Length: 159
Image (cartoon, rainbow, N blue to C red):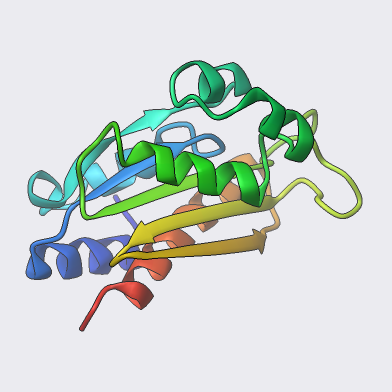
C-alpha cells in the first residue's frame, strides 16, 4: 500500500491531467511500483527505467562515461543528466531521476554517506534538484526517498 503522500501526489497529478515517468537507480523500481499501486496509476504513470548499475546509465541512457567517472554514479550531476535524458525515452509531463546510496559499497564518503539520495525532476519547464540524507536500513531509505519524490512533485505542480 503506498504512503499517504504518494496517494496524495497521484490524486493531484490525475486531477491536473499530468503524467510522470521515473528513472531509478537507488529505488530499483520501487518508486514506479509504489505509484502503480494508486488507483489513478493508469492515468498518471507512464513508466520507468531501472538503471541500478552504472553501465546501464551509460549504455541505455547515454550518460557520458567521463561524467560518471568525474562525479560518480550517485551524484547530483548524474541524476540531473538521467532526468534530462529520460525525456527522450518516455513522453510524460514530469520526469524524475533518483540515485543514491542505500547500502555500503558505492561511492560513499564522509561528505556523501550511506543514506544520501539525489533526486532531480524536470517539470513545467523547470529543473529541480534535491539532495537528502536519510537514516535507517536500505528499505527505509528507499521509502523515505519515494515520499520525498512525491513531496517534490506536489510542491512543484501548479495549483
